Image (cartoon, rainbow, N blue to C red; front, side, top):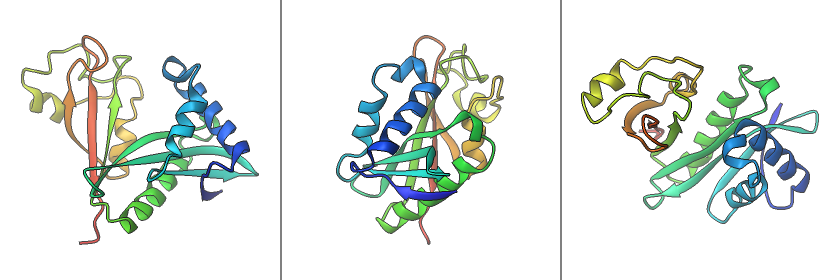
Length: 178
């Protein structure tokens, strides 16, 4: 496996990235996956991909925010047959190095809980918010635990962001060399 930076010229890989995105998030990208990948290739954004045997097996993107000091990680997707094999970790580590070189201090992301996959769902997060975050449990393989394994911390939630009882879990990681 090796990592490349995707560009608009990589039409084969763009199509493969769109298919992985469509399969991973059919409810969000069923008809717009390629457009989403192309949007990730816009100027100033970063999009890198993991390649194995000339096939794209995963990718991660980032969008500059707050000047250049904080970047939003969006999206991170790994082909189902390559999950839990270190691909996502490798993509995150490579992205961190690229963003560090651009002056980034913090990477952050929102990880939606649209399927009641954590104990933060189906509860009133306007009450005892921090206690609930501190005691979060993973009920159905929600990705927040992956992000924690690669160094991210839960820094907040947006209650009901995806509908009643469906929060967005906010995670962030400092990446400065200091």
